[in-house]
Length: 318
Image 1 (cartoon, rainbow, N blue to C red):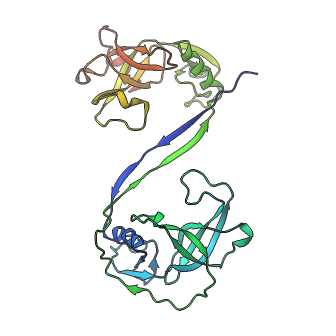
Image 2 (image 1 turned 180 degrees about the vertical axis):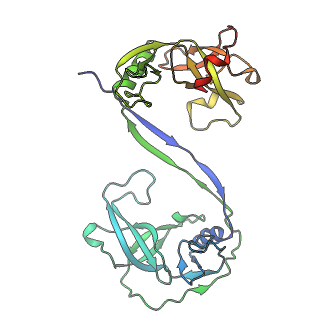
Image 3 (image 1 turned 45 degrees about the vertical axis):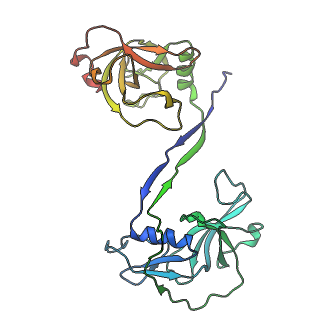
């Protein structure tokens, strides 16, 4: 039985965003241990607040303060916390309708076990010791014995000293990728500095990288075909933003990333173009792979010095 390839992969895209007056007031309020909601046209108090009425689409700005206590409306137990989750011990994900709010807030509940959690239980906010103006200023919810009482939301101006005007929102996905038969063969060929695709038995097109099935005909593919190594730039873009948290930190901008139709392939793959000024890269440019010592993949493609390919030879791949 052939060895099954697998590898851990991380997709990460941290970005920053500015805050409007409603979100700014909400996050700044959390820093000050104050929970704000916004009242909609029909009088419903939304927590967390939004800037536009979900029913009428009217702009909202009637801020009100709600209580730090509330009721669990639904929950799910998390027995194995993951990296960067709010608690490092087992906890419950909960939707909590704070007293005075008309909607529920998603957060976590610190409880000794799933038997200690129930829909309808009373909880209260446990504030973080160090607060910066983020949802994590609520460290978690904790059980609370107090009964719900009449809680009329109090009007609030939303004004605080030194308001929070922007946040960094990291997005990250960790997973293990298993490429399957077709892509495993493709990866193993790259170790030998070869590029292989698979030919569809119906339309006879050669797809690189292979998928194991023809994306056009929907039939399984198995016939391996070696393509390239040379190819043609079909289209490209000029990258002006330096990559972060990747192996490309040493690549100076601007640089060119292109779709390249390898000779014999019916699908263009993408790669970086090097060995030529970025403003001289063009459609039809003939290129060849450059391998780094010890690498299992092509580092970049460089011009071959051949005449440019005629547009009619690659127009179907643009």
